[in-house]
Length: 328
Image (tube, rainbow, N blue to C red):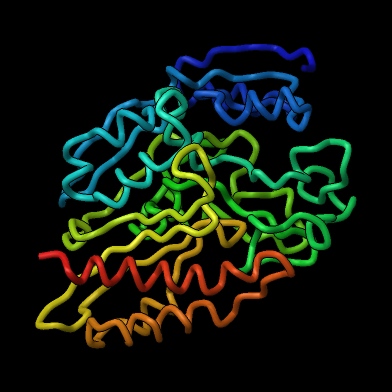
């Protein structure tokens, strides 16, 4: 591990200033991802800015019925919060499906959103990787890519985003509150992430010096009927091959509204807007669900060893919607 300077920020504003002073500085929350990358020599920060006590670690009620999660809140605490569990069960389920209990006790809300990909080529410094070293190549396209993207990828990168929590938040239209050199701003989660294009080294639209302070979830009454499905190789401590976050609003047998997002299929949590549009105003039946799922996955461009993800994602969407439609 390379030597680095350590500083503890008293609040988010100070963290932003400290981060901005050093181009190679990085933020340290729970460290469950960053420390691993430092050990692998993928991340080589000159300075670590400890924000573990710089941001809120609580859930707050927002006017109108939404929730605000502090960036420093531990995943275990967020998943166990009674209000969050009652209003957004999909989020609690997503949090509990991630990693292990020990890691959830350390991992933070903001850190979870900013996880780096687990692509084996990104984590192996002896191999080329456009995300780690731009213009060096993407050996995953011809090599091991079973767990990688089928949607939104580019010639430069087919990595997937590993977070479960982010998939649920994407379905819930969450927003991220950020403080940076230009002051404070509120960014939709869908605009925080970016697809790889020809700059796969940029996972997000954050600028150096930006610090996430909160995640805000707007009120969504029918999110009480929601769930998270994660398909993986083993029952725990495994990243998703495909995951689905869904919320469904049914009235008189018709889909009045719906929220869907997919994990394990793209460089970012994938909002299934095509499927959503195909479902609204349609009968809440299996054939409708199948048609919507097929429409969403029509743009998929799988590779040799991950083509199985296309039918897997379709079946996962259908099963999730069927289970939601059967709830009282």
